[in-house]
Length: 371
Image (cartoon, rainbow, N blue to C red; front, top):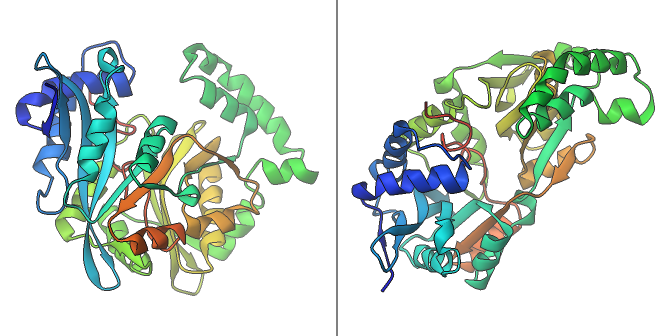
């Protein structure tokens, strides 16, 4: 009989190989550091008292045929502690796809001791399983956003992951963007480019901060939400350390945004390199200041030579983004499940802080090479 049980250390080679095949889409053997990181992420850093452990599905023949990776996140709601578990990396070996391993894993995860369960990477099929098990899709948290700064370079950067030879067109793309940059009329200039970024950056002060400096800001901005993370120092340090290791995405950028003669109104963290597409991990802003912080982020990326930036929406940012000629699309859905329906209602109303540093995309699974 197939069984579901907690992840064990001796499962890690099989899990790493499954990661390499199913999630990373690589035909080469899994690099040894990948198994080591999965151990650190899903075994060493897991607090069994806070929520569900990571789980494996074992087939009739005794082989590991499925996996769901789980990380714990303490949160607070109405002054009370809430144990949250974040479900990521739900996968089933291709040879077992006809089985119900994925559904069994998800059902076992949701039956764990946690008060609150999340995922921000639910595929259409996985989101359907969540809703069948009384979970809820959160549309305002489920969109990816893109701001195109240099159209030709953006097209090349987006295509080269699938067709590496396209990068040879980089010099032509830069010439095309230089020509387009001189044509600043009508709707074209509003949809593409960074507007008058020089004037914006003259009005606001952008200050680079290190990992520790950014960490100190996070609690000030997130604690204003009705449901928010309750990081301890060790957990936040681990999250921030992992979040800085994304070789595929480029250099780590952390900045605060302040009025020239005023306090800090927000901050942002993204990864990128000149000519590429930046990946935004987190945008933080005081109420009413989200638009300014987003404008400063785009201006900073443009000054750094990026072709565009992309990230994940949150309700607190979505309204501000709507008037800024930003494109939205859905790749994966953010889903939530809780025993207390009031917790779900708070997220449906946009009163919970989730995605980015409170989610899955901070981990090295997204954007690191493990070479």
